[in-house]
Length: 199
Image (cartoon, rainbow, N blue to C red; front, side):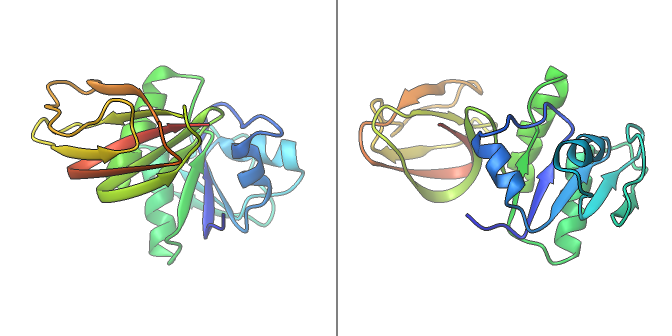
């Protein structure tokens, strides 16, 4: 899969050999969120394309990287990095390194990804924002969870063991822990939802 940029958040660094690591290793451009730049330089022996954030956790300024300081404390470094990428015309984005270290950051990153419309790839799967209809190629038995922040959300689904047609989203987690029973899962939602697809 080809991306305009891979955004490296400052959570746990992707494990070597995993999907997130492979995406990072093959990236045309890596945009590091603040202190994630240090880990990237150390692991890969090169500088990221750019470092974006409030610069409260960066150890050193890597040579050759564009340093973009955004002091705004009303949002997080992931939002700042996505905004900077889009302003530069980099539209096809994916986020890695968004999990781990602090659970509040993890949850903040996951739900900001929904608001921002960007995918997060983790060690165990991926979080994909869905607006309208989406289809996923999967293996039978793949874990699938849906998180809907708006209780007015209505969905239909194909290829899931427990269909989502008519589900009332009385809470954020009522459509989690499902699984694929076909090679393709198709979902349609009336409001934006976050879909987790396990590896």
